[in-house]
Amino acid sequence: MKAEEVYPSLPLAEWEETKITLHLFCQIVGKIRLTLSPKLNHWWHAPLYLSARGLTTRTIPCGNQSFDLELDFVDHELLLRTSAGDVRRMPLRGVSVSRFYVALFEALQECGMRVTVLAKPFDPERVKSRELFATDETHATYDPDSVHRFWWILSHLEPIFCEFRGRFLGKCSPVHFFWHSFDLAVTRFSGRAVAVAADADPVTREAYSHEVISAGFWVGDDQVREPAFYAYAHPQPQGLTSQPLRPAAASWAPQGGMALLRYEDFRRAKDPRAALLDFLQSSYEAAAKLAEWPRAQLELPSS
Image 1: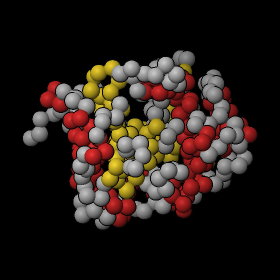
Image 2: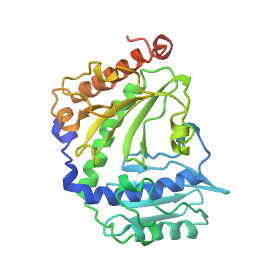
Image 3: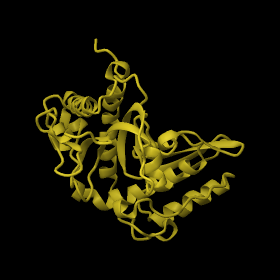
């Protein structure tokens, strides 16, 4: 299979309205997992995960039962499965955010699941919606082809991120999909705590309580109007943006100290996998060197 078939194009402008609807669907599903799952450090109980057909919550405990939710991007439906054997299917095509929300919570109630979430978007500026989930009839655009391409791309990127994660012996997040920011991400930790600003919000306080170097992929936003890979360090060491990056197409963003590799440059590379691993490794090395991470203790020796 050619690289352009494994990594098809996904111009943000061509599916942005669909992306907003899907983002809101993911937030609803993700908030259910966040509400019911036992709390884990750094919000690791919140994300979704790649499945063979889309995105999944994995198992969620609820009273004496458990269930999972899967956004199936092959048949384009939401699947609810419970430990009692109940199965419910809800279409993703042709439904508004309101109809999706109401149908999902009705299905949960029918299956004996009682759950209440904060029923409004997280980070409304990012998701471009301030409407409550239950009343949002505005967002109902869903192009199956674009959604399938989005999932197809993620499903082929995840193993590369997992390969990069496997090089690290220290504390490291899973490779997971954050529904609030709509990105596939993995985060490495030095093991050292950092001071958090007194006025930091609870999300930031928990996410950035320790030194991190994080990397991921997202499909574009108001600042970067195309799909791209990113990497950053927190706290950002002085001089980071003067460090070299690989491959040659990678660069540091003019503001914010984030390393970027355009998806279009990645998919056109002679060896896309090697290009992405180069980007992940070089951006990590740049930050870890300047922040004086104890790399000999944290990294798997190269064979």
